[in-house]
Image (cartoon, rainbow, N blue to C red):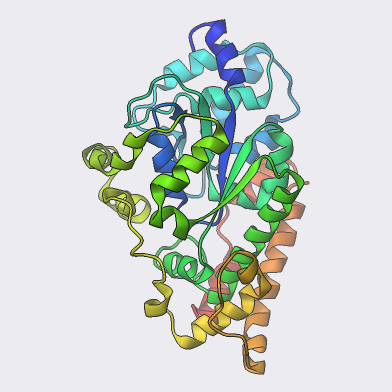
Length: 358
């Protein structure tokens, strides 16, 4: 990154995205790619779309605008762990220096690639042939991503909606409500698959259950899709446990990386059967509807009570309203948008007290 030649090489390096709901195994998949000797894929950093709304129309960069872009990388985020400052061993002076060398005709995609290549992986790298992004927060914006990155490829990682609900209930990522979590799973699946239908050559859908049951086979398929060589050594990722423990505090490891301390297994497939009540499973099946079948999952229930429909209606209406508001936010001035994105919702607290995790 110290020469024009290397900048030109970064421009030509393809990028791909891992899309899907939180807690679908995306961190595991991202770690497998991180362990690949030809891939750089930073830890979660959901700034891409915010930077697009702020700088997306710029095609000719001068020093002041590049400085503004650099400072924008450190804008406060709702979860402090997401900050780029938490990238292990990142050299911010080098990042600043290399961004300042990007004067002239360059796309935002190029600048983002420059940022991503400054991520220091725990794993040994050779020639970087691919740049990756894993941010579940981007998944509902698949149509926009496909337009912003017209040559990018996308991996849609899907997990059984009931297991996904159980995993989300065990963390504080979202409101602990069965209806809301299942509806968000459904919404995400539908919007990504609709986008995939428009760009079939650029999208690949993979079930979490298939990945953990036959990891070597399916990762080889992913490598073929992304046109990178197979690297069998990636499956020893868990041997870098010491580096992970040195880089992050225990509470962060427990919340985000606990599954990466052990080899891949399928013990978390079907956990909903022991962790959800019969009524909770019925509610999840009702909300998922026909999308469950489209995603390749068999519902436990086919018949529902009138009380079930009445119970799920408020959460579905609430969630639909949030999506409408989210679309409206995109037309606001950038500073207002940033404030709303990071502002905790009072409505969430009220709704949680009223409906809990029923």
